[in-house]
Image (tube, rainbow, N blue to C red):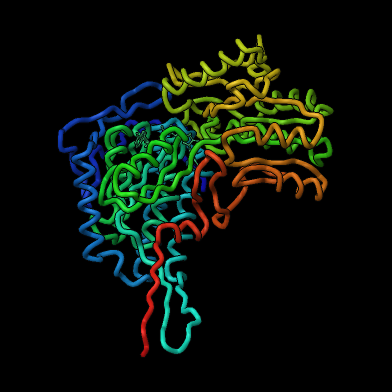
Length: 504
Ligand code: NAD
């Protein structure tokens, strides 16, 4: 997908856009019961975009009750699988037809370049919905081999009402990675989007209803994590919580499940992904370009961002020099509404301050800022007061530094030199995280050996971030306990029933 609109066109549309501010419950927009709101702020310029309804526990109760009623009367789960597939396919068509509005909402809300919305987010949203729609009537059960006195079937049934809690870095896409398999499996859902990016997901729910989805099946409650999110995770009528977000909040959710109804908890959490560059890599320039993209796409606000660059000592200095040169060539900071912009602000001034504080701390511990080049004359385009963080590369870092161990979630990479393969693997695996990793080498045996040794749910060889819907996405260790994408994620929103029928 591309946008033919100019910067001025997008500015004009932004000035005219109408924002739906309500919660979306039982097929319609409603105010929060307590009447409270919170501001949605454009991180590119600090402007308040809208006062959004601030859902709390009572609103979660209302949304879950709506989902439960829809679940119990079977208005979705009991439809023929093909009929549900047709609704999801029509939903995707409506998302596509409304892509300019949805792209604009998301760009205004979280500062993502409008071109990224068309190159990445929207195509992936569409692929996800269509993939799971097509899976619906391919789910099959089993008749097991028993003796002639019985018939035994193993079948898969939806769970009921699922709660989804999602982050702000790809607001619609992270939500749809949950919503599409949840709905395809026949469940009802209450979605709690991130409070930093609340504009787009209620529109997704409206479009689901416009596509023929029954009211009450897909509800959205915007609000704070500690209010609406916590209430959803503690709710006694929610069968499963599926979450993408930080590791710290993921741990809280496991606790909430234990304090309430022992609901299932699926977690996709943080990352600190290493990229290992072996001395024999066959296309040095292409590898460096992917290293640059691996950390600066989406201003580094990517769970699998390649934030730890491990480079063989023999190519380290050349790698750093090339990385600096290519970052300037490949990324254009600017107004996210300008289609030429490829690097926007981070999501908020709070996030900017967090990221800058982590860089500052690393420097106090001995790291060197190689990018932005000290004394560089290349001006950074910073539209009025935006939450921009410069593309940053840190050298002279050590494994014990927080910048190497902790997730930064901004456009900041560190680079470390290694001498041996064993050392590279040890550095890569020395992390509480295990979401993704990559290895760059021209040798097939090295590639196999190292990808097997890497403790990560996703390993890329001679690429970074590649994949399609057949790729299960999720982490080892404290990066999570579940997988999005792939048809297995649909199975994770189903439960297994064994039916033993006596034939005597
Ligand atoms: P976050 O954990 O702060 O918030 C995520 C969601 O949880 C938000 O909707 C928030 O309101 C909610 N929340 C916060 N506190 C809560 C509580 N006590 N109870 C219930 N809900 C609560 O994360 P974020 O800052 O929005 O997103 C960034 C994080 O997401 C990063 O750590 C990133 O790595 C992770 N992420 C992971 C993946 C993945 O697939 N593994 C993908 C994208 C982002």
